[in-house]
Image (tube, rainbow, N blue to C red; front, side, top):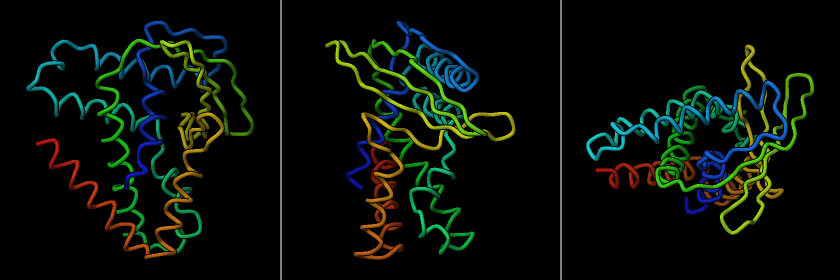
Length: 206
């Protein structure tokens, strides 16, 4: 699963140090996303959790904060597309678990070494339970990276179901990758690859 990297970039951009955060527009979806960002920043800046012996505790806290904002089941469903309907309830549960675990692990490794950047919230569009929060990351080299967060409303809570970075959709990107693997191999082949990647990550954390 080498192509997991695009997701890392997206999530790393999502949670880069926001000590220089600038808000050009703020509505409810934007505010809720900022709440998540603040939670993760608090974890990253917690002196107690920065200690070597607190790695697992710190990462668990980050995973919890991210999981509260990203709807991994919806993302997994959209990434599998038509193949999702062919799965049994047990297979769906397993896939969502693998999907979220791999992405979260890759993401956490990136943000633990976050550096000072600036993010600007430029706009927000809301339409019948769906929202798009438009942002722009400004790097140290003064390069702008446009990022859109697509959210859906569930029980008065806005959850991320896709991220578009420089015009490229995360979900569409993985849908293409997963479809290719399933068509050239099988769904079982895709799951096998994901489990292998998961085992690699677990071994690396020991």
